Amino acid sequence: MRSDREFITEYRSTLRRIDPSAESMPADASRTLALTEICLRFLSRFLPNENILTVPQLMMGYPSLLDSSTVGREAVKALAILRHFAAHVGSAALWDDACRSYQRTQETLRCFDFVNQIPQLRSARSTTLLEILDTWLAKAAPWTRSEDGPAGPGEALVALNDGEVVLRYQIPNVPPQDSTLRQHLLSSRHVNPPIKLNLDEMLSVAKKMDARECDEDWPADALPPLALADRLRKLRIETMGSGDSDSNTTITLDGAR
Image (cartoon, rainbow, N blue to C red):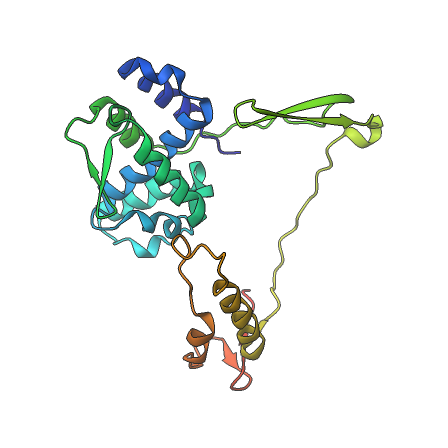
């Protein structure tokens, strides 16, 4: 699997050399800081006019949003690094939390300020940290083998919130024949069946989504309502390529061959 371990280790080590106060920073906090900084560096370098709300959309992985110039091709490679390292910030709520935490981080430990929600390089930034971010945006994400296996029998302790909460679990004894991880062989299909999309069913789901987004406890600041039902009502079906519409309410997409 792809791992951010090498990047986090290098970033954390450099951060502690620059400012000894980083020694007391919890491991999860320094990891969040590193991943936030590399996302912000991507924006400031490749999409300097975009605000921080763009990051969750980038994690969906649409390279066509970037231009085809040399800078655009570099950005596609850099975007692959972000998606390997920080795919979790595809959640707008998690990214919002990361940005709030970043703004609370002392200035000597970060490279950016937010100006109208656009990341701007600080004049007193660390050039060493910035070089690390740029170097990793040009790399391929390292590959590491996962050595995880079934836990042994007995009591297991799981620490949460930097050890403030400790949960205890009793793990049963697993017979040897069941402890071997099963591997499955997936064979590719030569023909994929057609996909039918019924607009009436989609509209029904959209109405449920809209109703949920109108609830008082919906985090509208982090997740603005989409008004999906209104968008679907404006949809006009047109035949494209091998696809066809069986009626005014159904779209049929031929499977890839």
